[in-house]
Length: 115
Image 1 (cartoon, rainbow, N blue to C red):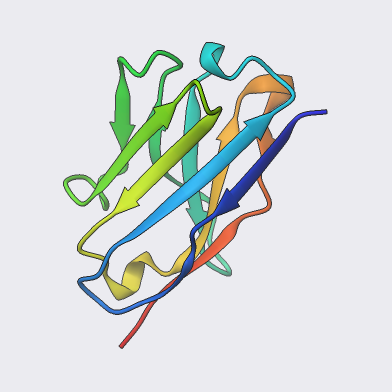
Image 2 (image 1 turned 30 degrees about the vertical axis):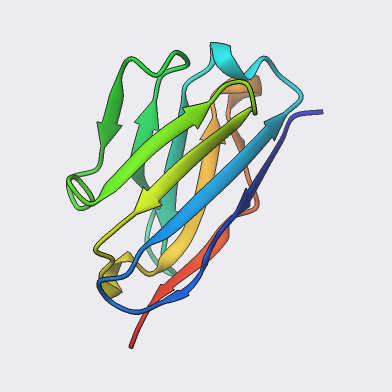
């Protein structure tokens, strides 16, 4: 059974930092790219960052480039999203995704940036 479990969300002030984690199970993690998306009510999910299985190629959404960093630990079947210099417009539910099994999503973790 493929499963993705996100954690690390919460309330943070503007300019602060958070690190999200996504633990994967049920597939060979190191063989697959992993991605982070985010969604606010009434809008489509937006790609935040993506990293290939070996970590050699990374893509960032334009709105987070230079502030967010994706990384992965294949020994722990975990992908991370380090979020720095957070802004109120980063408020969203953040999801991790694997293309395995036609595309599998985690349950999401809420990030709220507010003073």
